[in-house]
Length: 275
Figure: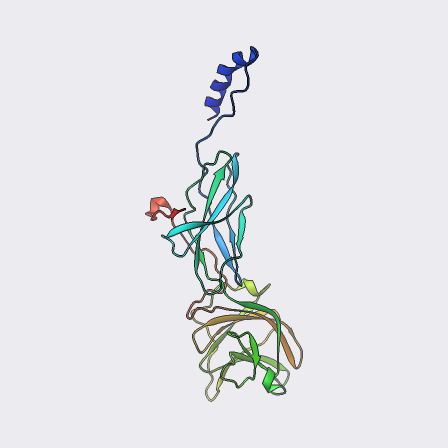
């Protein structure tokens, strides 16, 4: 491209010297490369989308597209000059596939990104509190689907809090599961519910439990086959304060989605279409 530009400048230079007007800017018809390493972060009625910056010198911005299937038709969601975009129109319980195209100042647009990227938004909440069931039985349990505090022995109770002689526990009933995923920075650190490693049911017990620790995130598998996570922020002798997220699609382990698989044309990727 630089060689062509130099030849054109040499050709028009004599004309410019004799008073001719500007002949206009050079037109580039080469599209940028498709953006790479697209990923998402799942939120509550939102999806945050990220990708690597393109390196073209004439890059003008990016168009972000969505579809309801990877090989479906992608519709324009919005445009940005940054390498990130937030889909505020995403609805909890719906799965969205995303593609990103780069465009330059001449309006040339790349193919859609080849990464397989999808996300299913889910509800979340912050700074909720429940109490020790031995002292406050009616406000010791939590029901994710309705986002409400319930009695620990309610049929709706997904988990409940206990202070047993100074040691704190998160309890679920024996037909549910719970697992301590360790210390985390925030509720978003845990991306997926695990396949195994759940707390055991000890002989004679009606509950499964993990010791409750501040700063730890716990994944819960509810009796009706939904997955959720709870991060403990504060505890006293009588109360626990926590953040939570709940996947409203039955059987979906997605608690925070990031890219897990890539497809490249040389690997036989089916071309995506968009409009």
